Image (cartoon, rainbow, N blue to C red; front, side):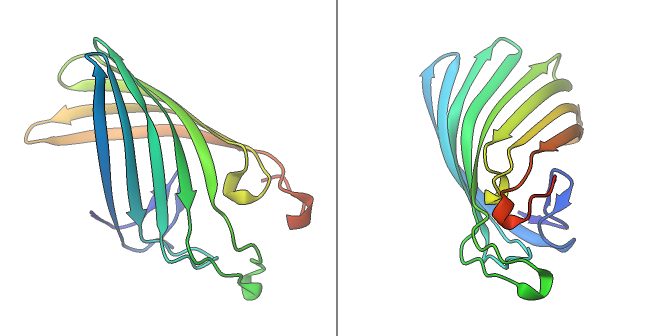
Length: 169
C-alpha cells in the first residue's frame, strides 16, 4: 500500500510524508468460533533515530460469537539499523518494544460496526515508560466497497528511565 502519511496514534512516523507498507498474515481455524493467526508487516519510516524501516511481528487469536468479535494478541515493533543523532539530542539507538492488545467489535448489520481497543506496553520505545492506549472505533460501509471509519483514543505514558532523563511523557 502507498499512503500519504504513516500516522500511528496521532504521531507521524513518516515526517508527514508519503510512505509504503506491506504485510502478510497466516490464519488457522481452530474451531468455527476461533482463529489463530501470525503475521509480519513492514513500513517505511522517517524517525529521529533513522531506522531503515519498521518491522512488526504479531500473533494472536480471534474468537467470534455471532456479531461480537474479539482479537487478543501481541506485537513486536522493531526498528532496524537505528542511529544516534546528537544534533537532535537523540542518543538512544534501540527503540524496539513489545505490545499486548485486546480488541472487541460488534457488527449491528451489514453497514455499521463499533468497537473498543486496549493496548499495553511495559517499555514504550524502550524508554522505561509504560504505555497504555485505549480507543473507540466506528465504521459505516458504503456502496462499491468504500467505508467511512474513525477512531477516538488516548495514550497514557509513564515516566522514562532516569538514564534517559526522567521526564513524564
